[in-house]
Image (cartoon, rainbow, N blue to C red):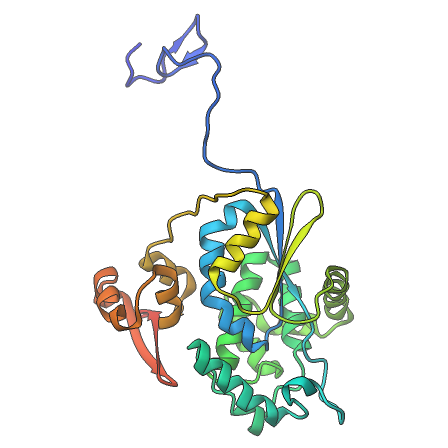
Length: 310
């Protein structure tokens, strides 16, 4: 049979294509069955979750072929009241949050303004959480996760109050969805019902702080990792859940593809994804991206990169 003519089939072997293929053999297509579930318990206004973004993105990009990823809303702040919200961290009123957020932002280099918690504080994390659940129900997990990212950018870096309806509508509109319809639905009883389902799961998982990542295997045994940790911690937890000594990470996507997907990346996120030193970031960007493909801006002393919309 002519190897280039795969429309001609061999009557004896039943092969349309190259004759000589073995009738039956073991093959490895390098796509392991996803045998574990990873639960990422988080909240739209969790500052340490924002700090975790660079590491979590790399972990998901390189190792998600081993696990099913689930984002779960944790319910960090229902509302402010007269008593202490988080006395262990000195959080009694909204203004107490501002200094804590700035400290997290400076330490992680994921910029946080935080002054709105003095001037126009977020009153509850439930409204943006309910919107997440409605998008997840009506659309898909990927779009809900993108909404979560845009909400955190709006809150932490750009100082917008994500407990306000108009802000949430704008964020959802910018995803190409009907912001008013989705936010209105989130305000209906179904929004809180969906959120309560996550709260029940959080309780069953025994989670009390955010971020928490729990990796559960087929035997229903899990590894719990609390707080924003280095990449090595999550890789080690995945190995433990899978009971293996080695994992095969995927190559990170090209920076061009990653920026096209994410729309906005802070310098720290690029450094973590590609093991680039801060001092080398400009050289790296220059090699990886054409000048007309991106814009570079600065906020709170940190550089960030966006796709060029012109």
